Length: 478
Image (cartoon, rainbow, N blue to C red; front, side, top):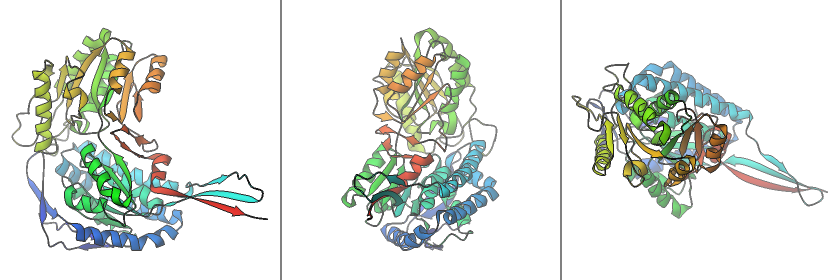
């Protein structure tokens, strides 16, 4: 409570005199801080600052923009432990994972800085004598980056680094659940010589601050990570201005385990994918389709590992496997989905209830067998440490059930048969497929969903170009 958290606009921290929001530790309910609940006026100021700064920022050679990114990455590494503890305290992430998040964030910023000398256009072949055709790539302009709470620190970099290296300026709105890490990021960024207005941060609620950003006529791209419902509202707000949107939304990732799979490898990968961040990851395995011949062995292995998962307050014990869910609403949702599956005939083999912990939003690691395609646990995003299983007879049945979903973000298959693996890659309707490993993407890949899992994507070359638009030049010579 001793730290005054303020919006950052045009290169300075701006005192906030309006309403404030509480930020609490989800593991203990401790009040951590109060932060600004800013509205349209602060958004207008931040967007105006970004708009003023953008032309000069674009004119800088990309290699100079990269230098500023590297300054930021270095500052993050200098304060890595403080940042990790901030993330753990406000989000509930175990400390080792929070440390990984900070390190990965710094590496990601450096990775994007490396693209400074790799941004490319194209020379096209003309049909006319003496004509030269050039496809140029240019920044879109002012970007609004609206962040989630599950990997809040890394998602700053995923929005900011590609926006800045390509010549855009940005206004960031952190999640109201986890804004403190974004303020700490901004405090470190302010110690660099990044020009004023290139990066701005405005804190507030999605329904007010997020809405104002999405609907702003001077914002050229809204990039958002979060729920489908919020993504729809952002599209609706952006529509009158025809503002571009880049949306990474929910997932219901299927994992297919065939009879010839390595049981231990599959069980370890599935549990790692399900327990990470207490199951609050949009790309982790959300449902398992296991072939009948291996179903008993895999189920036993999963129950053994999930029941051994240790959880609690991540700052009280650094050796835990997972922490709490982020809030009461998230806990209530998991409780309701598991109870509904049980009432519909599924068997809870381990877990299946709120954890008896003195404080916090804790839920027991859970395995549910006997699931059917109609159950919500097989159709809707759980976002908690729950792994539902359904037995299938063959790969074709597994693929059909996997594809029968509103979502299309990630998927996986466990098999020793390369033909089965490649068939799954051809037929699964998902942006990513992991073979014989846990669900977790690489920064040089392209993290993009289909269906209701999103529009556009992030990471790598293709994610970088999401922040640029094309300009074709026709040059006629004699």
